[in-house]
Amino acid sequence: MLRIISLNLNGIRSAWGKNVLPWVAAQNADIVCLQELKAQRADLTPEMLAPDGMQAFYHCAEKKGYSGVGIWSRQQPDRVVEGFDGGEFDAEGRYIRADFGNLSVISLYLPSGSSSPERQAAKFRFLDVFFPQMQALRAEGREIVLCGDWNIAHREIDLKNWKSNQKNSGFLPEERAWLSKVFDELGWADVYRQLYPEATDACYTWWSNRGQAWAKNVGWRIDYQIATPGIAASAVEASIYKAERFSDHAPLIIDYEYK
Image (tube, rainbow, N blue to C red; front, side, top):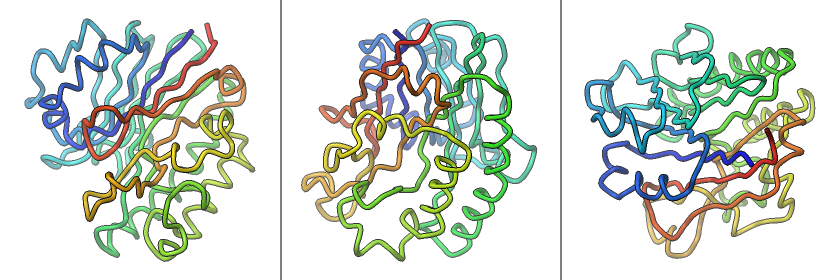
C-alpha cells in the first residue's frame, strides 16, 4: 500500500505550532506533499529538515514569507527537481518533483487570484504555461501523482455556494474549463472524484477565515491528487482529515495499491 498526503500548511512554522508533525507521524504516510511553506530555508529547524526520520525536500520562494512547496518521503528519491520551466513562477516556489523508480510525485501550489486583478492575471499566465507541462508529463510514460492546492473548484458539487461564486477567482468558467481540459483532453484523473463521484459537503478541503465558514462547513474542494490513469486506478480509499486544524486547509489522504 502507498499512502500519499497533500496539505497546504498556510505557513510551516504556524502548522508546527499546531502539532502537524505528530499527526503526520501517526499516519504512516509514504509521501507527504506540502504547500505554502511561507518560509526560507534558513527558517527551517533541524526537525523540519528531517521530520520523523523522513527525507525532506523544499522549494522555497525567493520572496520572504511567501508560497513554497515541499515533499517528505520515507524512501530516498532517485531524483528531486525544483521548478518546472525556469520562468516567473519558479521564483515563487510552486513546484517540486521527486522520482521513485517509475513513480513521480509532485507537490504543486497554483497561484490564487483572489487578492487582486494582477494576481488573477498571474494565475491565468500560470495556467497557460502549466498546461504544456501537464502534456509533457503525460508523454513521459511514467506513473505520476500531482498533489496540491490547485486553487480551482472544478464542479458545482465542489463548493457550497457555487451560484454566488461564479464570478470569483477559484470558480471562474475559464479556470474550470482548464481543469476539464486536463482531465478530458490530456487524460489525467481526479483521484478523489474517481473514488467518490457524488460527494458534496464531505469533499471540501478549504474554508475561508471569514464569517463562520468552518463552523457551517461552507467550504471548497481545491486540494487534489491528480494522477496518471494507471496509479489512479489503484486508489482504494481517500479521506479528508478534519478532527484537528493545522491550517485553513485540511489534509487529503489517499491510499493506493501500488508497489
